[in-house]
View 1: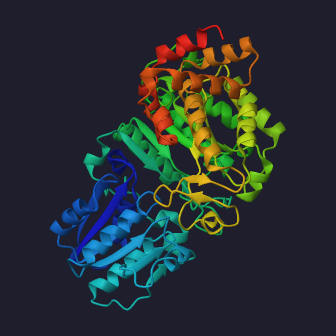
View 2: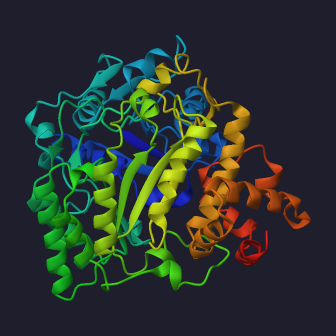
View 3: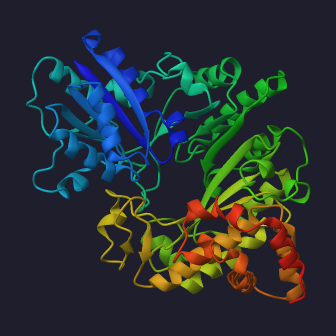
Length: 515
């Protein structure tokens, strides 16, 4: 039996990092009795690849079964591929991944071309399905779900490590970056998110396994970056500290640590953990925004984070209590948040702080009022402001509430919000451009000039952003930039292309002018 596993990623490089197909492959090899009867090929595609091109490459493998990992950015393209292939062969098509839920399946046309859907974590269900297909049986239910109480899935160590088992091909280490999962589940049930997968609790891989994987990636493979993609790395704070101490032990033994990226909330850490994070830095005192020369390229995930070792991602989302309540996020406790930010500054650690544009009940005024409260935390730091344009993930609870909140989205991946009942399309479009200008200046060595100009002129941050955008629009040199020409711009633009379109030197001169 010939099995093809298909991954379609946001861009070509992401195929090097995400591991879903290889996790399933390792699980099949360990638990499928007749594994040797399988011929397996993993195919990675960029989202930019045309449906016809994907179909042709899959067809060359002459598969009996094609399995797809489905995410918000690829689900429409996956369905297009399946529809085209159904007219070309009798292969069985299986969809799994974060976007596959019962609600999503029920929302599809009455006669979808898909044979099977895997809901939830998938390792056991997928293995069971492949076993049945190998035996010539195909009478399973159309939608399969894992029973997470079974030992081999409830105990996460029963899932083989793609690194320690050697499942991951050597060529996928070529970019020297790796993803790592230390736990599954999340204590939050945010309505815009599907990461929690409705799991009843958080489950953990053993510390011995995580340490073995870290040692393998850092010492043997010498990767340059590790992204730990747990929802909340510090959900078990003592455990997180022990992992941090192990990393410190590697550093103290003379081993070069890679960049390490993890996520937590300001509520889930204490000063001891922040101090451990600080001890992983390459040098004690860092302020790159004051020392790095501004360039016409993104510097916020490279030059501005030099020597920090750890990038700490913290989701704030909004300071608007009504918006947070609508998406089932806890309100911001200003006292605790201030204490957290003070600890980060005291110990000189780098934070990536996330804000969402377009939440229910947000307005143009409340969004920028949140930013007025938020931006001062960035002065004299190297923190990164990460603004996301809200995406309505298929299968998320928020997708079912779009009418309730008056949400209109782009109707195609990544399903970005265009308007809500409280935030008009015109205001959201204007906000995306102001957010682009903010990201371009604040997430660069121009940060100091930004704060200096606001202080000298006595303006709000919003006033300076509007004046700067007007200056860009008035300059004939920028007439053909996306910032001026397009109706709106998204977070891909304001984290990338704007750095080339609006040069640093022009911004330096603009911020120094007499207003």
